[in-house]
Image 1 (cartoon, rainbow, N blue to C red):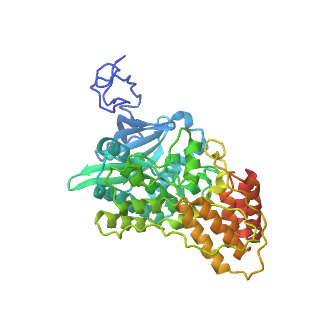
Image 2 (image 1 turned 30 degrees about the vertical axis):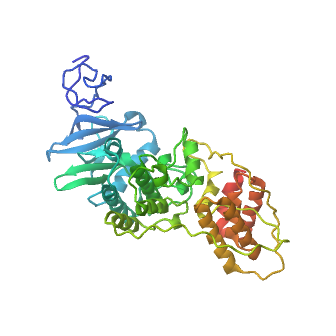
Image 3 (image 1 turned 45 degrees about the vertical axis):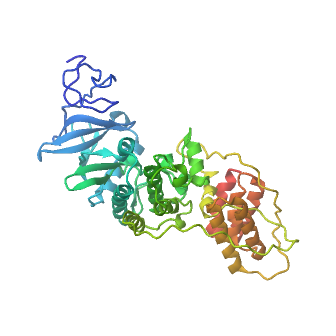
Length: 473
């Protein structure tokens, strides 16, 4: 009927179902309503579309009925206008392949994949989840009790553990991709959705993106993902940390007016501790400690598997987590001999990832913007040391402690420790590399020299990363 709403239409603003035959304006919120031509259509002779439940730039998602099985399914369909784009089609097919590998109660189940007989449109049929996404849960029900928060995310981690075991990393985990369903005797049952940009690590299929192009959502993106570096399952754990932070505080730790600013913060900035961000929220020290650990910039300082992090959350929920430890303060060391000229300073394990950010191309085609900071004190570039025996073991300990200092946001102390490390062992490539990272924004020419030294000392480990950084200087 012209000007009227057909059966199955819903409001794009408030998402409420609209009565058939009503005017094309929502009777609840007044938003204009546009009906979809596919409502009532049968796709591939098997799926009858009943309702539009979501849409994006590349396609639409419908509630449909599997005619042979008489069950509800979720049908994702690409728009006809993007079917000629091999990247979009490849990503859609990759989602089907990634999800089909998974057989876990907390992962969305793929039922079918193919092309519609009538118009050739690609479709992906998945199980239909009657619930709401975690973003809506946080919007409507925050604050969440800590036990509930841990229970939801433990299920997410169980699904990720299954995916990682099959060499699939999600790469775009966020609250919108986590459905929470209220089942009888199973409150807050979780389904992890949308493996649309998942990476299948052992696949021999061509990659859909170059190594230096970033895919994902900036607010939930790991530092190594933001810089286009090599990824593994630990990037998904960082995204879990962001979601945990948001569930505890109702805010993401890093946000800004542009994607570039958010990505720069992901790479450079330490998060404000949740209990400091929300002093009145009921956040236990144990949960805060878990969140801050999983948000470490250096993947080696995070939990190393989804199962490890899941067990930590369950311990928090059960009240059996060990008390949060205060960060160990750097030990005082004897001052360096006066003649020793200090060198430059990189950042710590977390900021080592910053190296790639200065040069690598991001999703929008721009390089990461460097924020202006207070210039660091002038530091001598001399690499010679006083006449003393080299002590590689001592240098490694100083490098480790510099990482702890930077984690505590004491960058001056981190630089001092790295300079001491170089003094006692000029051949410690890691110390030079980290020192270069700390100086990257305040003293780029001096950073260049430190990076070049690190590359000279260990080209296999640092050569590629240094080359990427120096392109941006």
